Image: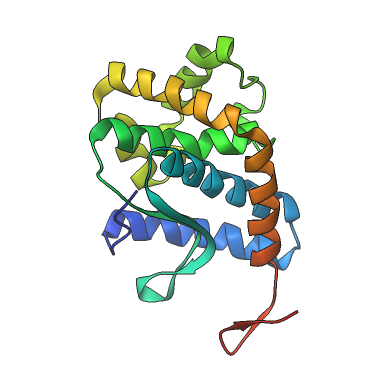
Length: 184
């Protein structure tokens, strides 16, 4: 997640996500923009809680003329466990803010449901971005389970901040841009 360089597998996945994002933006699909925003803000809040400098962004231009629906850049000492914490926080942020992907929408994101929720994510892991997948599996299964529980506590404890930042990020991304400057 901290390296968004031009790895071919990442660029292929982002090309597919770029088509979804463009279709959502053209169709005025606020829900989709909010889902991307909540994912990136989820990463951001956990990275911040770990003491990292972090910045979530939507509609980011990447090498090759592609756009990522969103990224969360961060700077800090990364270990496999910390990488898993931050990686889990993206999908957690989506679900806590109420923008679960359809394949997770029927499982409430509460502490008692973490084992079946985690199992559903693992069975759909390829639906996540390559950096999130790599981060989630970095510390092995047991470490990843611990990281999910800790990321849930951090994220759920900041629910109001999550929802507020999601609105700000989504609204900022919706501003038209002319000559590189946002327009009112």
